[in-house]
Length: 310
Image 1 (cartoon, one colour):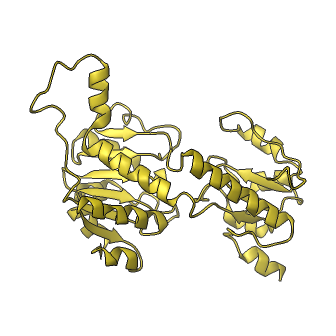
Image 2 (cartoon, one colour; image 1 turned 30 degrees about the vertical axis):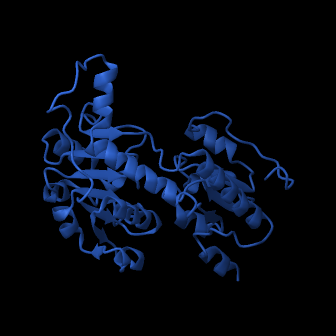
Image 3 (cartoon, one colour; image 1 turned 60 degrees about the horizontal axis):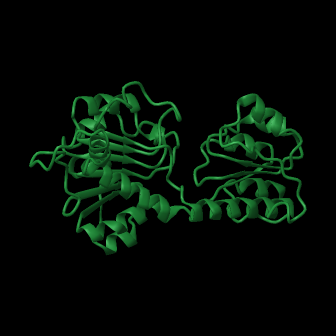
């Protein structure tokens, strides 16, 4: 799309993160940056890009990797890719829920390792999803989609949010505070943006509120959980399990996490389907084209830039 509209495009052709020096060198003199969620776009990077840079189009719904204040101060538009990955990420949250509850990775490793000698009544006993209580923490687009899926499992639905969610209320969901959700839920699924108020929202105190049979699912952002406290809780079996798509110091794991058999760890796959990643790419390109043609990008997150321009 970008090349067809006359832009010269330089891209990282390797499926790996750019190093800091590579990033600083690569952004110099660019009119637009199309960034990944693991690219830290701070004031230093924006300064390296220089005064020609008009937009940072983040290839993700979250944009905590971009220093929004610095971009706004420099008059640089910042956009994201909301909406298109909602259903795909909700699917993955449920995949993690089922994998943790029924101990799928453990059981598969057992079979593949040649250890299975036949059916046994006590092998890999897990937890039922049907009829259980699900707590959705953060009832935005993705949290709502996760909650709506709970009807198929006849679950009791709780949600934590600043406002009532009519879609979830309509299917019998009940808005409660965080403590009530943690104490009552069999499954806790996190769907919050990473902002100062949500950093380590789930820490040692919150994990101790959860049932010993409960499972914690995170497809939001890693630092929402105090990962060291989670390792401690999982190791002591204070909660039954966890399913993680995101990590506090991504891609590094907190020591001890990878050795635990009651956690499912996958490499940030929330939006990872061919169709969804394609739609995200189109959206990011559309945001860039709008900005470079003097129009308001459809997914602008720092509207103050336009207001300052008058």
